[in-house]
Structure formats: structure tokens, C-alpha cells
Amino acid sequence: MNLPPALKRYTQWLGFTAMLIPLLVLLALQYRSLVRLDQTSSLVHKAVLNNFLEAVSSEVDYFYRNNAERVLDLPASVFTQGQLAKAAVHFKKKGVEGVKRLFVVNLQEEEEGNPLYFYPDCASFQPPPWSPELRAVYVASSPWRLLAHKGAVVERVRLAAEEKDPDYRILLYPVTDDASKLVGLAGMVLDEDYFRNRVLPMAVDKALATFDSGELAPFVSVKDAKGRTVYTTGALHGREPEVEKPFSLVFTDWTVGLASRHATPAAMARRSFLLNVCLSTALAAVLLGGVLLTLRTSSRAMKLSRMKNEFVSNVSHELRTPLASIRVFAELLRLGRVETPEKTREYGEYIETESRRLSQLINNILDFASIESGRKTYHFERCDVREVVCETLKTFGVRLRQSGFNIHLEGADIPLPPARIDAGAVAQSLSNLLDNAVKYSNGRTDVTVTLRRDGDWIVVAVTDQGIGIPRDEQRKIFDRFHRVSTGLVHDVKGSGLGLSIVRHIVDAHRGRVTVESRPGEGSTFSILLPVEMPEPAGSAAITAHTEARERTSEA
Image (tube, rainbow, N blue to C red; front, side, top):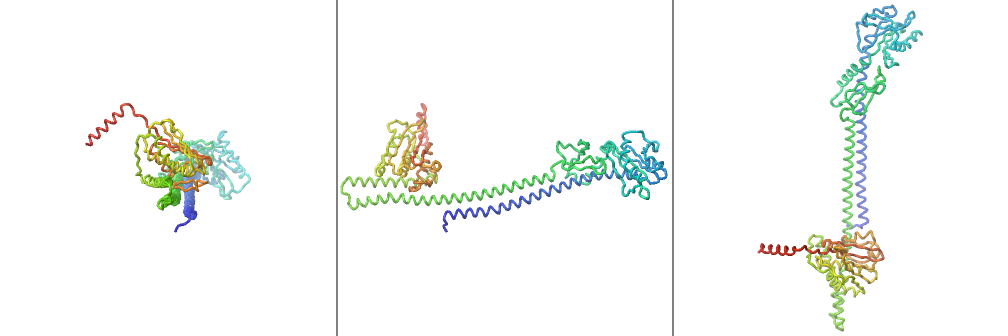
């Protein structure tokens, strides 16, 4: 079923849209899925890292909480019954690492509530001299002394950390009697160097033991309150930790951070996401390009089919016109209606002219077929271009005179150098240009043919005063089957092969064909043929010798 061209184009675009919409929907769904996967992978990875940091913080807390409860858990009788010597024995027996100082504070009413330091050498408690450390102990114990003075009931308080002075971090263990009233405090001043050099490595090693360190391969870093790195398991090389967390019991102004040593799962997921997006986009672009290419090929095929149909129609019209003229004049001669020899000669000229016109059209078609199949050949010889032009104008002149056209030849008296050309092909090119000048004359009957030399080129120009060619069409008119689709040009019948054959012939001669035209002012088509350069001295003899040797070898 043959559909109208407009309906065919509509069907093509409809099919293209039907393919494009599902493709875009598929891309959107895939992109959404990849985004969700990327977000989920990032969340999972951060959860793993946070769990690791939580494990490090828990190890630190456990170390200090366990030591504090093991050493500082004194019975209330130590304070209520004045058994500090018993507490001293307990401290010496338990022993503790990572502590600068152990102390107690008696909060009984009859006591002054002054801190007493434990001295391991003599296993006793003594009032200490004034120092910044003692001031920090006073500050830490002041709220508890106030509670004890008020007789407040203290419940569910096992261990408290005091870090108002970062140089002296203190853990306090409140001691209560059976009525949950404070009777005393046991405390320790922590050793920062021990925490940095012993506790942190121990906590990190234990946390790593609970994780797959080969897969995670982390860099652990700890920063103090001033942002200085005080501990690290490897150089971060300027990278910031992926996650950070402060310690929860003591050293709460310090943070522990974690950065992956190699590509993290989140980074791998990000790269995988980008790779999948790029591959999906590339695949979509390829599919879209294939669809567009198919659509373009189909459109060009439809256009070519339309052009061929127009070609057949135009060629049929071109063939009927000379055949009809030949038939009319032949019938007049056959019926004996020609009365004088002059009329017989005139009718014969008409028949000859239309026959040449018919032959030219057929030659164009045959030449086009040869060009398309790659079987077109040319026979180059040294020729005088002026003679070829004059002979072509003489042959074409009969038709021009019959149509009332005047041909003006300029430059015929100027000597031109010879050129290696196929005389018949050049004559055919000139005939095609003259034929176009006649067809598109728009009633103006003057055609000028100009011969001249321009440097290394021999120029044959055909100028008419016809309807002209729009600028945007001038580069397309040399394409096969192309005919200008606007103005009066479209109303003139033609095969659309003439200028295409002209360009092929000129290209075969290593020349150029140009056009200068303005709508309503006419056109000038110029054929530029290269001048045959003279051979260097002695080259002719060498060529003759070579040809003679080749003939001898063949014999």
C-alpha cells in the first residue's frame, strides 16, 4: 500500500516516539534504582564505620570504668568508722595503671572534707601541699560536698567524670551509707600520656579484632581538644576522616576518626553507580543514534524515491518533446507537404536539432548510470579548448536560433594554451550548461560564453540573465536528482542530472566548477580546466625511449 509522503513521515515519527518513550522510562527507573543503591551502600558503610568507632570508645570506657569500680569501690565504714588505713591497704593491694593520683574525701560532718592523697610508698593517706592538681580535686569534689552538707539522698550514682580542667581529668566514686547519703568520695587523677600511649592502641587493636580489617583496612586517628592528631595508625595524607566520634566517659573533648585505607565500599558503590549510569547513557545514546540513523536512512530513501519518481516523470516529458517534434516534421516530409528545398532543409535542421537534443538526454542518462556503477571512463588528449567550445556552440546554435536565443562568445580571439581533456566530455558539460541557460532564461534570450585564462586554469563560463538560484541552494544543485524547489525553477521540467554530470566530468579533469547567481539577475557557471604544463627539456625523448623499449619487450 502506497501512503502519501506526509503520512509516511508521520508514521515514522510516531514509531520513533513509541520507541523513545519506553527507553526514557527505562533509563529513569534504572537511574532511580542506582541512586537508591548508592544511598543504601553509603548508609551501610557509615553504619559499619560508626560501629567500629563505638567499639573503640566502648573499650576505652570499659578500661577506665572497670579500673575505677575495682579500685574505688570502698565500703561506707571507711569514712563512718575512721578506717582510712583499711582503704590504704585496699588501694595498695588492688593497684592500678594509668593513674597519676588516688585520693579520698571524707564528707562526715565532723570532718573538714579536705582531700587526702594516697602515697603508695608508705601505704597511707596524707594531706597534700597546695598545687594546681589539688585545686582541680577541690573543684571536682565541691558539688558533692554541697550535697553531703545538705544531707541529700544520692541514688544510682556509681561513677562520675570531672574534666573542667583538661590537664587534670578526674574520676570520682561516691560512697553512700545504707540511707543513700554521701559519706565520702574516692577518686583518681588520670594520666594523659598513659591514655595516649597505652589505652588508645589497646582499644583500637581490640576493636580491629572484632572487624574484618582486611576488608575494611582503616586508618584510625585521634585528635585532642585543640584539633591536634595525638594518635594514628597510618598517614592520612591530607584526607579527612570519613566519620568521627567523641569519647563518652573521659577525654570527651577528644575525637576518634576513621578513614578507609583503600577504596571504601561507598567509593566503590559510587564508582559502580557512575559506571552504570555512563554505560546506561551510552547504551541509550547508541540505541537512540541507531533509531535516528534508521529514521534518517528511511527519510533519505523516501526522498530518493520521490526524486527518482520525479526524474522518471521529467525524463518522460523531456523525451516526448523532441520525439513529438521529430514525428511532426517527419510526417510533413513523408506526406510531401514541403514545397521548396529551403523548407526541406529547414525541417531537416529541426529534426537534426531535436535528435541531438534527444541524444544529449540519453547520453546524460547513460553517463549517469556509468558514473553510479563506477564504469565511466575518459580519454584524455591534448586539445585546444577554444576549438571544442566553438564546435559545441556551432552544433548547439541551431536549437538556440530556433528558440530565438542569441549566443555571444567572448575571448575567442585570445590564444589559450592546450589542455589534456576528453573533448567529448567537455563538450557535453558545456552543452548541459547551455541547456540550463535556455531552460531557465525566463524569457531573456541573451547567453554569453566566455573563454579566458586565469593563472594555471582555462576558464569556460556560461552566463545567462535568467531567474537565478538562491544562495542556500547553490551548493546542492550539483547533487544528483536535486532540483531547486522554489520559484520558477521548479516549474521547468528537467532530469536533475545535468549539473551532477558536469561536476563529475570536471572533477575527472582535476578541475573545478563554480556558480555565481542571484535570484532575478541570472547565473554564471564556470568550468575551470588545468593548463597542461610544458614537459622539462629531455623528458619527451625519455618518454619516447621508454615507450619504444616497452614495445620491444612486448614483441
